[in-house]
Length: 386
Image (cartoon, rainbow, N blue to C red; front, side, top):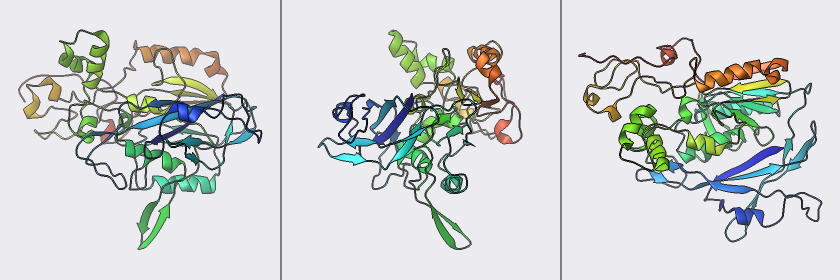
């Protein structure tokens, strides 16, 4: 069974599941003998824009909710090793249809089946991303899967970074060959479209720090992204909230979340980690995706910055304005739920009999450069006169 999704804003999709599903049921065929698989629809809960968003023909005065709906169809039936054609059809409120081109889908590959897998990361709307993806399609051709080790976009709750950023580097269109990103070199401008990849191949992702949003009260979307807090600190803003569900929501809103990322994708799941960390088998490959990332804080020691090694002078009396260094979002240390889950996975028969194993995580334990110092571990807080 494959899960295929069409995701868009109300600019061209109504997001109404009844309109999408009305023409047929999952086992019906039209007069041409083609199967129709209706989609389920849900609205993403945190997608927004702000004054820094670059949406064609639109501007935003401060943080503004943007309606985005995800339509997901579950397709049953393709035999392993066989590709079948498909289209995506969406109806607006007047019943007018938007019809995609013809793409292909296939069942999970069997063991021993040759595969071309693209391993990538850190797209973040960067200038060269569409050019690189276009070169993948031109040189490698169609791939069978895409493994992406985090930092898909820059600000995860900014909807345009996923769908229609005016600069030509939005995440999904770049992986579909539908952007127009001009690059000028030596006076010559070349426009790149990205690569037509994920219309034919499943996308497996890992959480990076750019999939995590911080406090909703911190200001514009960039400020919110840069101000996550540890859960226990966020909870101090919710001491008067008695209802359990409201309290959980309050703590999330005052600490950090990966809600948009988790709502956008249908990924394998683990019992303890859900879609945040998981393992699955893709043909001869056992793929393990970990939630191993932390907030970036500058290594500078300026007295007015929220840094990796010190707090800004003006925040020492307000716990909700401090940064708490480069704290780790999801524990992965010995004894944590993720650590114990990973131990079981490494002992599993699926992992042991796989011909190839890939462990995908965003922040490595040890490497070089400013972004990894100090080493990947929870910071130890020292209070005193500085």
